[in-house]
Image (cartoon, each protein chain N blue to C red):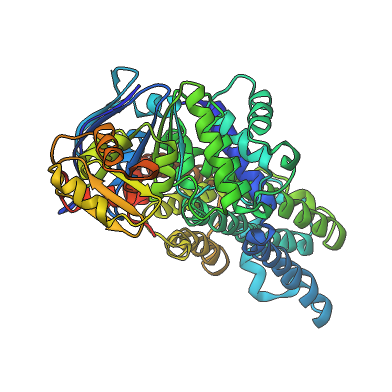
Length: 303
Length: 269
């Protein structure tokens, strides 16, 4: 749906984005993560047709968009980092201006539908200045989707929101995926990425990694399994050591076992432990947090 | 160019202005001064001193110059001098919409950026020309309305307090040309300049300071009229209007070329 093709952007001597390529597919939530100054917002602005790439290009629905940024902007919904509502206009007026700027044939109907979808109909006559941060973000989301865009770019969609408002916004983002839109979110919230994203691109001026969250975990950290016993785990660590597993850490009644060692998988390990008389209470894969993965990959520690 | 997009943003501009009545203060203040000055000079001073303007030797030249205008001979000496003064201060009334336009336009792009509403706006299919045109009209139309209101007040004051025939003399082609041809064109120049500058600097005061340059030639015209016996005739009005129209087209083009979305989005804080 929306493709970045070797996008680069320089501002004077500073390179903000360098040869970044990826595509966002219909019905997919694609997350762009990276440290401050990594080029996330610049990338979003290039994809939204707001600034021109220094080199490379953007394709939308398979078509290059160079020189027709106006058409690109008509097909994309962009939620900017700040909601950017006109404070002296009501919610309805804010949305209606944008509906008309997008040339919608029935702006009032589109505004009603968007307000209904985002649950702000009862606030239609209120001035934007008096809305809470969460409500402003809802209205901004409604504005970004007024013209029924195929691709939606969301810059820090839950930044600064209280947990309840953030959950509401996440639910709205999931709804976009169900509607088969291509959704690109730029965020620092890795927990949110873990909950929402189908694929993740780690950006640090250049593209550091791009994959599903699960695959990124596997790349950054060897697979591990955690086994909890009815009693102390120390003795069982020796059993596994004899089986050739070298990366085994005991902590009270739990063993954390690296699976990269002797070619053994979780069922083999469980079998050996049971055969050795272990009373196993629980077995679960040990997943590093996405934050750990992010830090490992950023520091170049991918395996 | 899409007129519907221009009208959409223009509607927003006008709705937004309703919430900021203070922005009209400079224009209203200038208009009030322009209305009160001829009242003071032509009506109050003679009333307090008990000396008729027609008897003043200093105003003989002004009277003779004014009497050269078509239709002016029908007025008596006192009415003719009052009409002359009211008409001369009409040039000052031109400053009223200019001041209003500058206040509004200098804030236009900078205000959107400061309120962080510019980026969502630029993310729509709106072109730079459409954006600047809507911003320009959004300042020009209220300024024009203000100009009309000030003129009606000026006319009413002349009709009620001045000699008979003075108010009617303000409805002749020359004063009407000053107010509704030269005035709007000067306003357009001021606000085109303000919008241009507003696209390049990141605070409204800088834009206002530069756009205020437009006031200088208008003030010069007023001084030339009063001090040097220069009469703004209809050909002069048409010439100034024509020159300003050309300047305005150039400024609009300059504005579009100066408007750098990238710089505005990435470097303005």
